[in-house]
Length: 309
Ligand SMILES: Nc1ncnc2c1ncn2[C@@H]1O[C@H](COP(=O)(O)OP(=O)(O)OP(=O)(O)O)[C@@H](O)[C@H]1O
Ligand SMILES: Cc1ncc(CO)c(N)n1
Image (cartoon, rainbow, N blue to C red; front, side, top):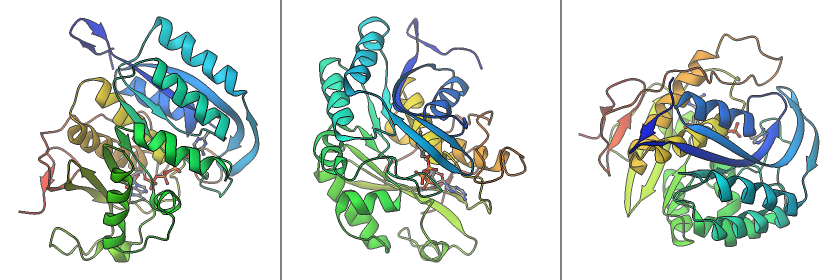
């Protein structure tokens, strides 16, 4: 992939996240994804984890002042067309990041409210959740919680389609422009009877997108694999890259959905590590056709197939 140039400028994207020594999630997944999308990737590291596909063996959080210094270094000089946040570790880092975002005008912000790693290790302190909700959610152009993260942010468990929809509306009311409730943790049972009026027999992975008062749905076949380490990081980095390239929010999410599907599919037979293996960041970037708000789209491959008509 060559560097994408838009209006004579090299497209840039910034990730503010934790380092995953195993290379499948965090900063490493984000930079690999941005590269694959032809976007010049930069990083502000919040924490360093000793991590592999089996779990998180250790976490070293950086000082909030040093996080702020990295943001100033990158944004005073290079600037960015879009940014994303991932693991933010603690309350003082969240405040430093939001202060930095307010100081430097960042055109788009994607917030992946990372809370726990696949193996269950916490990646944020419980005291930091309020700061996440009160300071970062209102600044998000796009927020991408999985089901457990959306439950924590909304303060109650989420199990039904109706509850997923109400949660998206609650986060939008809290100030997020677009809310993506990711389907990786939904049970296949809930995918059999759908809000767009068609039943699905095979298990699918559905992402619910609430944007400007409309619900749009993106889905793919659910892949039977435990190699899903860093799926959320990869997906939000793909959305960030597409926004940096100038695509609309819905088009960006559709392409990211197709990319993460191919990335999970592509690494199904990899032998990287003994636990939750990483996804294939070498996957194809399927630049798709335009998406209309309110539709339900199958993003397994090009062109997207509209399912609600
Ligand atoms: N088995 C699967 N098959 C197809 N798509 C999947 C599968 N698992 C997750 N996805 C998709 O991957 C994307 C990330 O969702 P997921 O809910 O797994 O994020 P996450 O829990 O935040 O990931 P992580 O914590 O590992 O970074 C979503 O688009 C989701 O629908
Ligand atoms: C550093 C880091 N960020 C995010 C995740 C979530 O996948 C992880 N496992 N590690």
